[in-house]
Image (cartoon, rainbow, N blue to C red; front, side):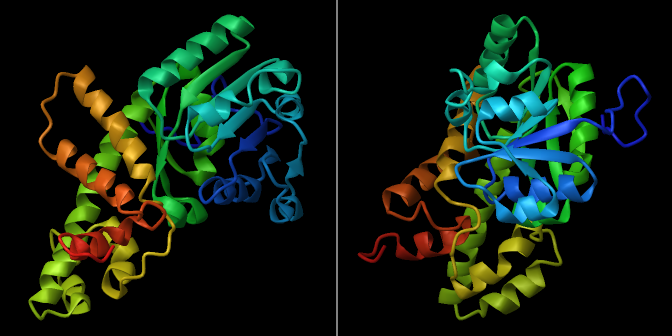
Length: 307
């Protein structure tokens, strides 16, 4: 179900709730800015202070413990769970400062690993620390505009609170129990990986057949081949510019998680093994730090000596 701002009093989040933000990269920083712009109190911790966030009204904390002492909820936008786990324990860790804390994991991670982490935190803190998963889709553009698709999984009360807190960042939808958000994100990444591979390959086919890629995508973008992904990567595909905004190497991890879902559900996948193999090949070719639109370059170079 979709959670909107008209939540009842039992599930509404107090205006005084402070949100901690950890992971201020390409996605985390604009999400934090959206929270600030909506009037949320934001504190943050990271490897570097962000003068931009401080100027916008957020407050820096020098340790994860200090962040947990200030916040009622923490949005985690780190690459994966190991980066979060490194911040949990010890005298300056999140757990040392947590009294009643909702950890909202926006990282693309394993659903099983998220459930295991939540169980450990619940047991170690006597329920003081609770977890929801809330991976997102929409890219940097969506994070900046506040139009992300936010995939929520967890306890109903906790996901209702998380949805209320994260509403300035996009459209939160509760998909099921803990881990459901990560399963949905795995499905999303399968579709994105397959689509960007097809777009890159089609661009090469058209260009080598004498068709102008811009004319191709201007035309096909209005039909069934059109998508948000094509709209966001169209110029990159046309010009061959694969300066990164969404790194291709992260797809390897994401598709590994999708493979785990397929195995857990007894699904003999057709597309998944192909796209996973392709992205493994992209990284092996030294292209993992390029944008996912590098699929055009990758396809064009296959079978040649040029990377």
